[in-house]
Length: 348
Image (tube, rainbow, N blue to C red; front, side, top):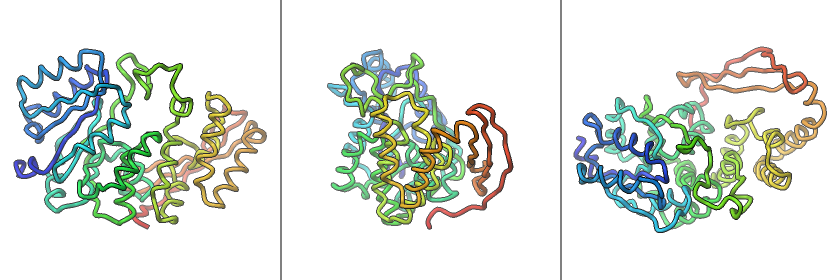
């Protein structure tokens, strides 16, 4: 069974200057009990300047299934993602980062899903993707969290991926296609990939590592995850689904959207304005009205009294806990009450 899937799945690892984390990743993938230890694994190195090259050569001396590609330039992590999808040649492709951890207990489910020719296999569950379509799409923003059927990649998808490099989530072009065409998606019950610490080995959380920080385009340098995510949602063609996803966003922000998120940002005003307008343009009419109202109130009433809600999908993924809170003088926070909402289902 494993041998069959071995011939169907391409595995890629994208990396840059995180030798210690890459070592841990390779050890997990190649350990004795790993079901993918004999699979083709291609490492695409973004022209690392640390000891990454030597590390990989050491592993290659013991594992002939490792392929090493070193870019001539650091093209950026997101461009490296696109390169991995471009180079895939087998029926399925799984693009990994260099900083996560793995639990192989549910790998048999992956094998069955691939044998059933499912279009996407979701192998990360920390966002509870089975709860509703908003959580599903959010989970697919985690690159290693989905194994994709390569036949869904066409010229348009690759073009959208390339365009979306600037929005930090090029792979959401493929996720959007699966959603748009109601493709067959399997969600593994127990996560195989667990998200790791995305900081570099010096503890810096920088997504433009290796570049001259003084010369980077300001919009690239100060791009927020939620802005890139919002811009990516335009690729969801069904307006009803797109509006549902943005209106039920539980990603890094209060009030289920970015209504006040950027007001606390340290970015220059021109960049905060850009980020706010990206969110604003995506919202439906009712959402735009609420957005503007909250924008005004955040400079006045909300500084004194702010009532908001936080939504958390409970661990089993079948219920949503909505907690209403009150904040005084932008500091003192108290819970008011909580309500529970049952599972919505993936598609509307």
